[in-house]
Image (tube, rainbow, N blue to C red; front, side):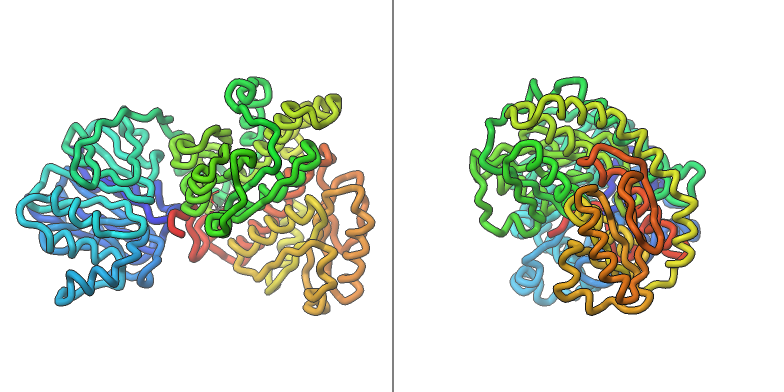
Length: 595
Ligand code: G6P
């Protein structure tokens, strides 16, 4: 949520900043801006809209010859998207960019800046005015003074006209990394700078980094020097290349089999768990996550409970952290997060650790905060996911949960050994079945053509089918803006069925053979009231609906992995026909680093 980029000592700062912003646009895309220090003066350009709009603006501005600068792509929290509210913000000789929320901005204004006129509606602007207010002749001291007063979350990158050779960065509860290569760099996300650096430092909360042209010094907020060791990182294979696809989302749906294969290969045969994951048979598991990752948790619960006979609670992270969870040393907490930076999930992880729980994370980004702070990390191998609506990372998270379920069942001796062997075999084949499920795309295109003008849809299912329905509903609503709801199929008759009328669209997910008859009854109930039902089912479970999408048979516990594919494709094609901005849906961001 908001992307920060900074560089110092580079040959040309503007292209470095723009390239970084383009790579981090998934974090927010309602406005963007850069500030560079050229011949002793800071020049700022910012613009409402996408980075492309900023690039256009820059084409008209004078030649910006600079070696140091900062940039920002915004997801608005305080103040609507506009040129004025876009970052960077300036006061006196200081200019800064910010990711996070300064919760006490109103109190600080009242106490220190009563007479200061602000130009924007942002919380951020208060921070830059404070820098100016506390500055006499030492930037670092003014920064330390300011950040000691700020409450909330803030990653900052600051430049000052009096110190043209230094870039200052701060991290408190918002991600920020810094690195050294041909110059020094800062970014919210390693992938934005990984190709430019040979040495990376992940900043911790409460740290200030001072980036000179070829070295970095670290301090705490009391300005005591800190010695840090570099972190490992992977050079990023990201390219802004959609291949033959019109959108990243479609490309990533097609990369799902590969994401599953790589994740399974990395863990199933390597026995990594045996070496590192020592967990005694617990009284309960907690699975905690947000958004689609939470939906994979709903699947995980059923897989774990079936295989381990241990109860599982699945919680949304934003609720878990404030619910005084009954977590202790005997209730491992599994955090699922594609980005590894979601603020609520990270806070939930810290809450679980505070309460003495062992923590396991399922994360797609190795250098992320959640990966580095949990006791054990299971890295999904989906590769960088660009589209805001997750598809391949979701598929890889499911695979990771199957792997964990099998691992725990083996470790605790809670499932039949032959059954577990069968599941392992099915897991190594899963990518092929998911790949075969992609064969439904032509049929999906036809259905999408018929559904493109609907204004609402209901997704229903039982058991695993409900978990799939929840994800299907989220996918369609987030990218097509059609109002969607997901229900446990048996719940429809307790209220929501009153909304069914002639032509209402209902998508039914038939994941469980043994529940097919029950789901059929629910389908019949809504059809007899006029609903038009599209059923997703596997080859061996026949179901009667207005349209049926059949996917290949797979191990019953893995059915969501195949059945989600047609629903992802359906959401994609409906959104495409509606002319929606599929990879960057309105109001959303991929990495949600504020509460
Ligand atoms: C955002 C994204 C979702 C994602 C959720 C959790 O809302 O748009 O696709 O599922 O955050 O993100 P995480 O990175 O923790 O999986």
